[in-house]
Length: 253
Ligand SMILES: [Zn+2]
Image (cartoon, rainbow, N blue to C red; front, side, top):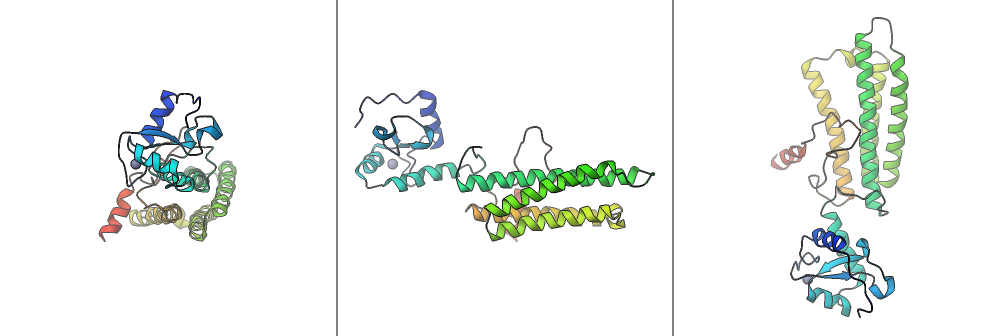
């Protein structure tokens, strides 16, 4: 079968081994030693590409070559390897789940930018003794329209649950923005308890969406980071990052 096959470059081989944790990629097998297999056979593609390659033990490799394990199944095993770290999504990954995850992260980021601009407006109003600080309005409006677009995008890609939860976050944020624009007393003067309850409400809105996203991706809520742990050049959201405890508490209750 190996006709003038070029050697698999070492960095690529290493990537493949690491992807499968140096074990046979069939999750119920996990045997060693390992061989590298092409999912669409080498003689048809004649190139080594990460997305078309997988590491298998000799037994599973033989069964794959014989057709005991078919190509669709093997693609699914490859898929499952990718799922083992759901937080890593290549920017050019064309799969629907990667699209949904990217839209979700964009939503979180744009929503956070909007929230920051509203919070800045609150501060500007509080500090200004010369009427409404109209200078802050524009950035607030721009951020709002970006957040609206991100909500629509997420709704397009997500199921009903995702759509509902994303719009809930949006509507909640819009109400807050309106309260600030309308100079509602409640948006400026809050007791400690009110501020705490308000922050919890905001967190729960994001958490609800997170659960819907995870359900759509067939993941437990703690398998996907609540927020990305880093995003270069952007401020992280002012909700606690270590919110895994949120779901732990749920489980214990
Ligand atoms: Zn195996």
